[in-house]
Length: 365
Image (cartoon, rainbow, N blue to C red; front, side, top):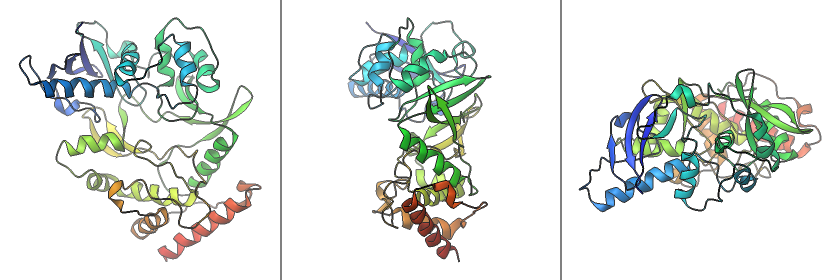
């Protein structure tokens, strides 16, 4: 049976699309960054229809927890959902709670449904903190409403959940003692440099240490991944990398420099991106640097791992090479002392960090 959906940006109806691929776009400039649709009437060719429905399902599916998430099956069982295998199955899970997210103000409603953004958005409406037990610990629970899944619509492979306290959301991340320790130490080190970044603090959940960070988005500002920005920029005939450097070259270079210093090997294109002005749906600058729980990896050589931020065209650039280029362009920008005692008994990590820092300092001189 054909179903008709309305793709919303706040209270703006951006497009209408059905499950056979027929589509009507009302505001092309407000389409999601990672979603490509074409206007398609009943007489349009089959390829266009297939592409529309495939792209729509893929976008919806991306707004649900991924199956590589630890405890993903436990979470799905807890909300009474099937174990999704295809994008279509994942999409229907996300559509059951209107594809709402804490990363932006996009959502989906069925055509004719009388509901507004103020009634369903996650910034203003309450989330049940009881679901945190499932997201962080993999516990089973009984839930009658799939809307609980909204609590865990967070990308990544480590256990995490949003907790609302005093009207503000905080991201609690587990993943084991080492991952938490790495993130906390890396965050402390990075705060000694001038760079817009998410600050991770130590927290306790269920007697275990977790990292805790505040939500960076608001109803006025969203975030979009570098991966989605690639699609959006290319569809407009712009070079994504050059656009980013024009918008915020300083943050880009500091990201490469800091990732080298702390040995972060997880800066893939889903792990950084841009801040978007929701009023006009245009990128402003890079969003705050985040996610350090894969720090101090590939930390056995001064060169480090390969640089991921440049993409496939980087030609095998190492993190060291990217950091040295960054230092040459924007400097070191250190504003605080990194203390030896922060590293505790991690003598090898301290020595490698010190060696990398000295390597960058020589480039600045």
